[in-house]
Amino acid sequence: MDLKLKNKEECTFDAVSLGEVMLRLDPGEGRIRTARSFRAWEGGGEYNVVRGLRRCFGLKTAVITAFADNEVGRLMEDFILQGGVDTSLINWKKTDGIGRLCRNGLNFTERGFGIRGAVGCSDRANTAISQATPDDFNFDYIFGELGVRWLHTGGIYAALSEQSCETVLAAIKTAKKYGTIVSYDLNYRPSMWSAIGGHAKAQEVNKEIAKYVDVMIGNEEDFTACLGFQIEGNDENLKSLNIEGYKKMINEAAKTYPNFKAVATTLRTVKTATVNDWSALCWADGEIYKAAQYDGLEIMDRVGGGDSFASGLIYGLMATGDPEKAVNYGAAHGALAMTTPGDTTMASKSEVEGIMSGAGARVKR
Image 1 (cartoon, rainbow, N blue to C red):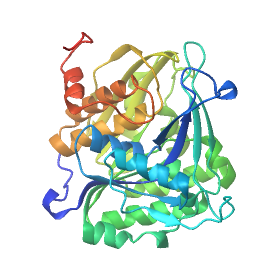
Image 2 (image 1 turned 45 degrees about the vertical axis):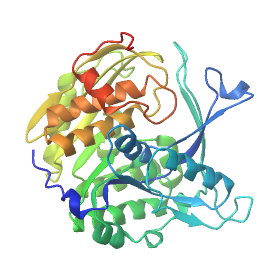
Image 3 (image 1 turned 30 degrees about the vertical axis):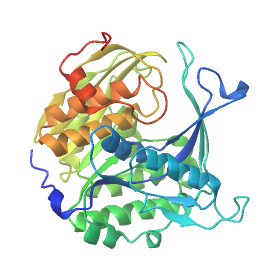
């Protein structure tokens, strides 16, 4: 598989992401509604991918985002720096002290356990990045002068506001102009699209974005809601998966958008909040490859599992050009990421490759 990646030597960054980064407040094993203390993390659907590429796979990455220039924004910057992701592309916006001009997003997330599913409660209206326009970022400088091999963005950021829809399109069009590979995770969130036109707007925006994407990523709901592709006969409760239906859907997506060089979808059967079956599919060059199956995967925190799948997939495509290896990097990395708390990965590349080669969970001394 030849993605025609730009040479590493001519680029400042291997990969950058465009999207919102929020402060995640985590009640641990408890509930949001009864918590008396929270553990703070950073997280965001697009950012989590480049953080994984940096911390797990050792690539040089940066985040394109905006923060209100206050103490919470600086806390977010500190988290990002701890993850090794470059912060030089962050746009710092003035605020008035109480968030009327702009603010930073908060995301309260409880992990769920057994029959109690995970719950998210976000507080992200009027954030700095939701107000950002294409003029806030010099995309010609980023992709033309600095040089970037890979841009990752997604449907969570696109759904934030009318402005974010425009900013996504401006970024990916400029990236394509300079030969940067573009990946996009559909990540459909109906509650986010509801304020700017609902499901119809989601399809309008995502169908336009899809015309410029090289690697399209999502689950079954994402492809149906955002691009209109259906999986016939799939169990709505995800207790069983129609794999042939998934393959047909992916082939239809690839046929509809001939610009797609790869299409990937995660496969998740939800048994309980803490036990899932997990795998993935990847289409490339007319073939579909299935990752190893992780049945009965025990989960500590499922949030960010799909983002870690995306970072593993991207690393595999960049490093090997082999879609079968890439989808296995993605599935293994996503599985490992869900065994630790927080949105972002705590896995190492050697651990991912160990899982890919069948390593067990015996103690290492």
